Amino acid sequence: MNQPPERALGRVIACDGSRATILSAVSTGSWLAGDAWAIGRMVSINLGSSRIVALVYKLHAVEPAWSEAEENPIRVEVELLGEVLESADGRTRFQSGISTFPPIGAIAHRIRAGDLALVHDLGDRGGVEIGHVTQDASIPATVSIQDMLSRHFALVGTTGVGKSSAVALLLRRAVSVRPRLRVLILDPHNEYSSAFPDLALTIDGESLDLPFWMFRQEEFAEVVFRGRAPLDDEPDILREVVLAARARYRMPSSGQDMARDLGSSLLKRPLDLGAPRQPAEAPQGGVVDAATPYRLKDAFAVIDEMIGLHEQRWPRAALRSLKVRLESLHADPRYRFMFGRANMYETVAPILAQVFRIPMHGRPITAFQLGGLPGEVVNAVASVLSRLAFDLAAASQGACEILVLCEEAHRYVPSDTSLGFAPTRQALARIAKEGRKYGAYLGIVTQRPGELDPTILSQCSTVFAMRLANERDQQIIRSAISDASASTINFLSSIGNREAIAFGEGVATTMRMRFAELKPHELPAMGARGGEAAVRLEPTLDDMVRRMRA
Image 1 (tube, rainbow, N blue to C red):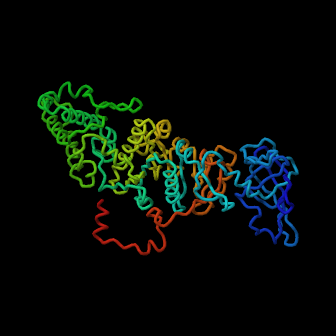
Image 2 (cartoon, rainbow, N blue to C red):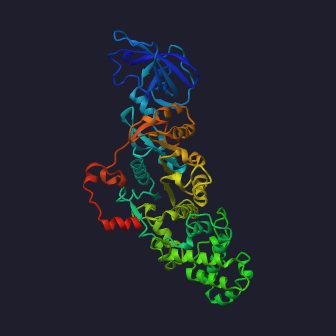
Image 3 (tube, one colour):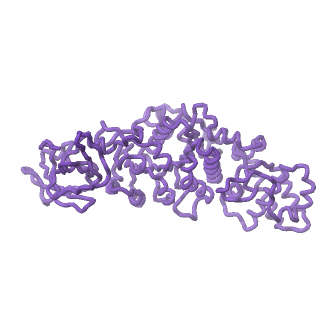
């Protein structure tokens, strides 16, 4: 346990149980040395039978004036992380927490490379390398993919720090060690299709089929009423129309009889048509929410018959308005993914096969490009996909593992509960709270953690915090760190690109690390820089107009 004298840095002069103060000295000629005191670096405190590992989080000079000729005393504030224990046979291990606190006068040393590696070693948990430790590039930064996924994870950071590249790297590592894992990326910026040319299927507005009859009542209402709050009668009218249209699809021969009953008992009581029920845990919405087909032409016929009834249950103006809305949606080419081929499908099976890669055929990732969809339908589509991911994982009893990677998550689960779309919030919260039991996992990516629902973030047990300049965002991350290294967040606003503070279940201890660089063809599209961007051809005016219309 003896340390070479040249590795000694100072002595402990104060300790309060979780932090300590070290008195040291620096001279003008040595203050630029690479191994000198620096914020965010780890040091060790020698106790003879063990070595305490501490993190430097604050430095200040003792004297107000600087001496060029002599050494200048400095006070170094450190946070105690854990200790390296050495057995009689020479084997060492690191344990979090402190069993023996440093006495006054204990010597602080530059940490050994072996001890630093030991601090970040996952042991028998099977870590996967995702980069290197910032303090020593020779030490790999590893993460337990199993713990990261099963207890959900989040990656936060301001724009331009390398979030998308870090996400692409984590997903590549995840699918390489979890062969049963399927990944659904909710991609609002259409940037991930280029990141996985060998692993992903890209679904955009042109190739997507998500029939309208797969939408639940609230989801379909969000589309029909284009995001505005429906008027008092509108949700009930839409519900009754859908119920009757579903009944006609299943029993077409009884259409004439049903037409005579439109004003009476048929639409005044819940229908039980033998449609498949949702799982017991799912919110119950009657057969109107069962994923069974129906035809819009039947819905139009139902509305016409309701308008023609002698005894009106609903205002004719409201009925006509609903029909016009449905007709305009059906005719709008932007909604072709919902209505264009909807009645070519009798079940949800082919839709699930495409979206969730069953079978995989070597491409376990689906890059779902939300950016090409109408803005007013994005929330509803995200709700449908998240709900289906959970239901599919539950139906497989864990055999089909699904990771829902939610980019710009603050859009879907904002901290203000009056904002956003309630069904999307519920679907994502359900994965976060119950998904682990069934193999449904959640990955949250956002540049605004302060605007994200804190209950969702609290369910993510592994967090990669990249540079955050906003004080509110930093405070959210600071409150999420439960271990002894909360002071790490103090310099979160100044870490470099591709750097992150990783903490939680998936890592051995809180670590400052730098993500590995991806190959150029593995970078997300919006991450293209330099020569690649320079040679990109400018689209024609017709192309740009077509994209604007889409």
